[in-house]
Figure 1 (tube, rainbow, N blue to C red):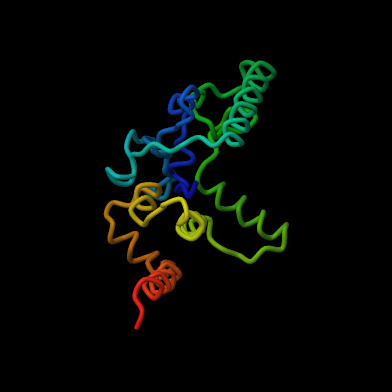
Figure 2 (cartoon, helix red, strand yellow; figure 1 turned 120 degrees about the vertical axis):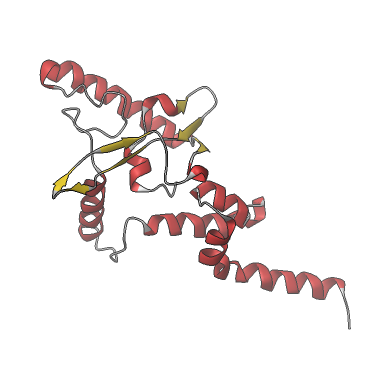
Length: 185
């Protein structure tokens, strides 16, 4: 989905519209250091106004989320009073109900890459991968840079265009091919 770490950690069960297969990005969790101490900051807002968005819930993701929800219920029953109820509404919690933090996502990502002998990239680079796939593979379905801007939650079009317009070179080559088929010299 190309979500930011803070958006992933901020996902709550209440943002999923199971009937309409959509979920909303409207809450973030960050962990800034204040006076040398890491704080968990939960906000009912995103990086910017355009970061507040609705995204379709793909069937395999929906299935996985339903499995995760059932698993969390099992852990909650199993560990009873030891289960941390502070984060019940959040999707990303561990077996004991503790919130999984953005830094953990980064370290788990690095471990995943090493375990599978993949080239090291930042977790944030998955946003770029998402945008590249949307632009290159979504062209035949009408996906534009404007759609990608909205999908990623960029505050303005120029951000998306500046970062991803070089990927649009295939479209230019296709355009000249189309023009040459229409106009003959």
